[in-house]
Image 1 (cartoon, rainbow, N blue to C red):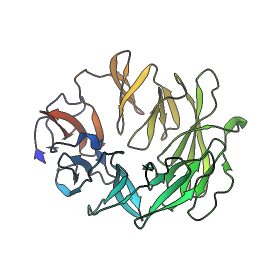
Image 2 (image 1 turned 30 degrees about the vertical axis):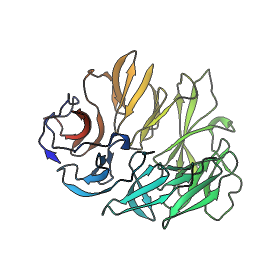
Image 3 (image 1 turned 180 degrees about the horizontal axis):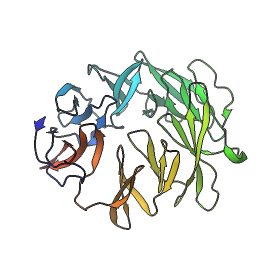
Image 4 (image 1 turned 180 degrees about the vertical axis):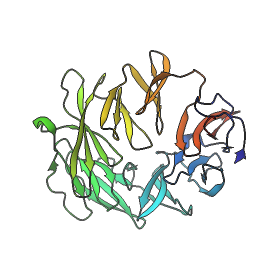
Length: 336
């Protein structure tokens, strides 16, 4: 890492332009920088090495080869066989690296299948949506999905959370699924639309109440069951609104509606369109003006040339910038 370099772009407002450290050239197609639960930073450099660094000092904890091929997911912290790992899908291969040692392992995925990395553990979903799988001791073990069910997330206990409009399942390899457990839906509705899985919660929408507006219903995926958490108002231009989750796993933006799991609330962002979502804020656009917001940040304009923090650590903000023909990552400390 290069220490004490001035950022080659306009620093975000809250952070100083002189970096603690700068990364080598990144591999842009490998996706966003990852901050691990321990506060380290992981990224892929253009020599196809994944690197884990101490976010405060920039000291390299370990580096390891990153497989050849086209990345299908960002780097994500998850667990395999009870170990915390950093994982990514590259072509039809799921690769993972032990977060402590950097030891690399992986498994080839069936043609057309994809790895979901939203829960405690990877879930492997077949291209036709008929089966879901978990990784165990270097192999994929599969379970049949009930008709109409979507596999949402793998769990640390080895189960797979799946859901449909009428209910949910905790699926176990080697056991028949059975009938769905019904949702605890307020107001007597009998079905809903599943949006996503985020931070141990299932985000759903009820049928439209007026026009394209649809109540948001959030459920907690608990050890033994799935229970109703809270209900909020969803405002949409149309019901196929794009979903942009935060890497913090605590909030996201569905179309123009900010969904805040920690505070149990939704916020209408108006004529907003999303560009990028980070740990605590989102960069978007309203009527041609760049703006940012977040669960604890009111809507505000952004200078046209101002950089945007990709993620946060206790040491500061990780910010990506162009240097010559390459992208690099800077760790910027807070301004004094």
